Amino acid sequence: MRVRDVDKENLVIENAIDQIVRDGFQGFSMNKLAKACSVSVATLYIYYKDKDDLIQKIGAKIALKFFAGTVKGFSPEMSFAEGLWTQWENRAHFTMLYPKEVAFFEIVKHSPHAEVILDSIEEFSAFRAIMKRFIDNAIENKDVAPMAFEAFWSVAYGPLYTLLNFHTEGKSMGGKPFKLTTEIMRDAFQATIKGLKP
Image (cartoon, rainbow, N blue to C red; front, side):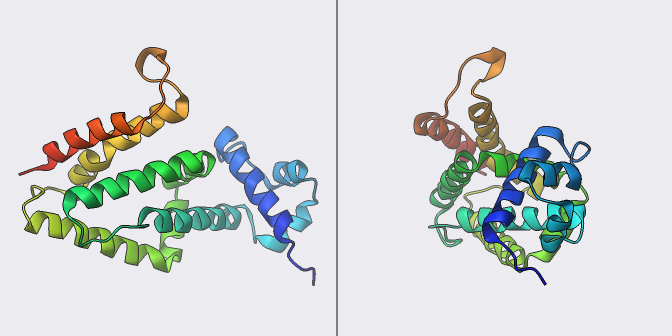
């Protein structure tokens, strides 16, 4: 049996992310991936059962990295403003550090692979429990008005992800050049905190 080559595996992951971000699932194939990595298709099957397995394993790897990055320095017992700001900083840092991985996960998130990936990650349940406790504490402390989770998420994180999309594209509305700064992020954050208050 052939031994896994970590460098080769990392090259496969990097090229798969590039291809899926550029061409979507429809334009992606194991043959194209093998060619881009200068390996045989048979080599890919040392690492992955099939194309779906490859997508799901890469998605799980990115999700784990994201969860770890998001909770860095964060506690559900923090005050709402401090905890949400920590979340914003962590999410912004991750998006700016790993733009291709984030773009890949955005594509995967809106596919049947998403559920399989999240179900395969034990840490996802812990992440959800931490975030639920944080939101429950904020409601109990009357820092946040009770609302549907989807409404909360849209108001709490929607402004951040809009700014991050502008930053990633390098332009805002009408093609105006844009680079996200801490000051702009703070302005949006203050408006978000006000919008969530009871």
